[in-house]
Length: 283
Image: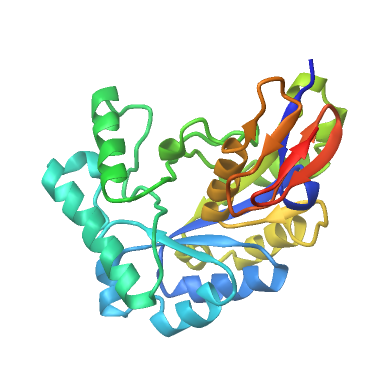
């Protein structure tokens, strides 16, 4: 049996992404720091605050966030937990925020982080299913949740319950980073050679409150500058993984066709291969 595993661009086995919420003034300092280390972040912005332009400056977002390859995503118009509002209110909150972000920045917004207490394991299954459908209806394709820090470094099973690796305040964050950096996917048992993802989240204003911006520098210094790591936004990871999942194989598994617009890399029977957009490749 020949095993096939996704590999990130250029055949990398590891990726790093950040996700930071609310778009407060401290996010400007945060952006300057992560830009200096080459990290990528998804900034989850609140629609009403973007309209008032009194927190993170909208011109700064255009110049130092979007122009530098970061992503902006939905964080609700009023920053309300989706399971605490009626369905119509929830739909309006999501849609109003998405429209505000798209009007202001001239981009299409399809990502999200749940605001307030998010969606966690205490949420009733039927409520969570209702919320997921709500997100689909307004064109959101993924949403980050929280409250499940772990060092598995796995991609999500459910894009609408995307659990990050850890908050930057997690006391084990540097232990997690060291484990991630030393991870050798190709040395694992053959059936377990999945790609790994380190996903850190938080709020930039927390560095102000704790007066520990040196912690951010230490984290970024450890995570940045590695040639074997793909630094990507949440949306870039989502779109790349979905492109991999869209590959079409012949009935006998001897050929693969890439119907997407993204070059996809993968490991096939221990060999590193790529398939370009529109290409059919014999394996």
